[in-house]
Length: 319
Image (cartoon, rainbow, N blue to C red; front, side, top):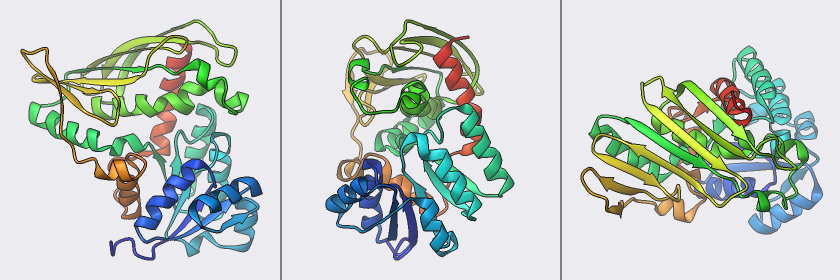
């Protein structure tokens, strides 16, 4: 715990996700300053966490305080504010930022942020916490022992009827595959490898999104084949299945791991040490541990996210 004791962290955002971050930061004994925009969210944040919130937004805060006073910066604002807030922090001199996924509304916004981070010689990491699930860590052990991934499949069906009832802004809903479905897509490619070739198909439509059905296949830089499907206007759920020479590893739900052994149709649960994922939002504790100690091996940089966002848009629109 001494690695984190009294580490000064600036947490920008008073969202529900920010509350989850704050819970972990408290467990790590960090000295956390929270900045929010509106009074309503700030009051709710304080009521839930007992922590004070600086109200008025990051621009007002940075006019009075210096980012140099903090060891690290976390950004957990709404999707439409991720890139604008990150830009303000970069202008103010922040050099080590953990930015909530997906980092921006679209590929253009993410690329512009990546260019700015490069110009400022700053590290901006995108917080895909599913990379830090206990289920993923255990699967990596099995994959390594089996000699690597040979193929994988995944599904990123969204429940359109539920999504349409949220208070998300139209510009966020219009980019829902990037803004939400990449939670599972990123996890699949993290385990299976970065796509090198991909053929995408999309069809159907919703009143808030251009398409509702998505299908595709391709190969990765590791010469691993993959396929995917999603139908947002039909029953379904998020699923990732990783295939090695010896096993099929099934994430359904993503927080749990099941295994099928070669030569058998039986699917069994795999025992994992998921105590941290039960006590905190899954993946978040290990993610913050890595970020605060400078271990960036499992993170995606904003530059890598900019590259992948073009593929995400291809998946959303079809070839």
